[in-house]
Amino acid sequence: MALERVRTGSVWEETLGAARAVAAGNVVLVGGTMPPTAGAAAVGDPYEQARVALADAVAALTPFGLGIESVVRTRLYLSHSRDVEEVTRAHQELFDAVRPVTTLVVVSGFADSRILVQVELEAYRGDREAAS
Image 1 (cartoon, one colour):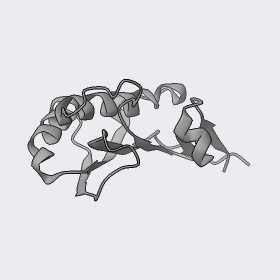
Image 2 (spheres, rainbow, N blue to C red; image 1 turned 90 degrees about the vertical axis):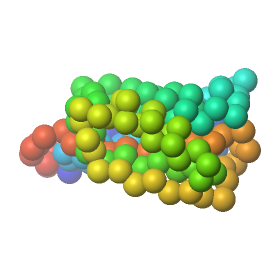
Image 3 (cartoon, helix red, strand yellow; image 1 turned 180 degrees about the vertical axis):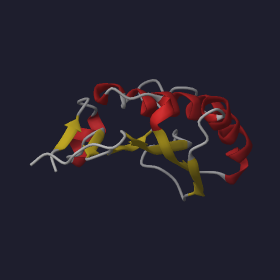
Image 4 (tube, one colour; image 1 turned 45 degrees about the horizontal axis):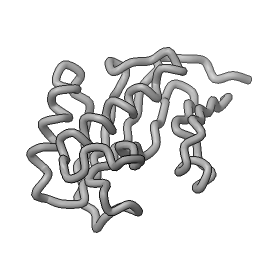
């Protein structure tokens, strides 16, 4: 099976030695996506941070020719349980028609304390033959 990797050159990708997204056969995995920390997008606004992070995660599917309709799983990481309502509202607005399976977890925090939300997603590319 051939692996395809997409890198955006973000600071975190370089620091971690990671890719933004990896396709393995018929599955595409998008790594933890946070709102941009330059200027701390929407500092203190969990809804806006979730909206931006989710949109950026979905955009990472574009190099694979996929869009939101291909998303089968999302994971939402929050640094505060008080933000559940706002983050789930952003998720529902984007994914209401798609209905991926979703996990929501409250964590102790992120490397940048201004970040309130991080998201991951998985997408399905349809049945593909493994490359030999």
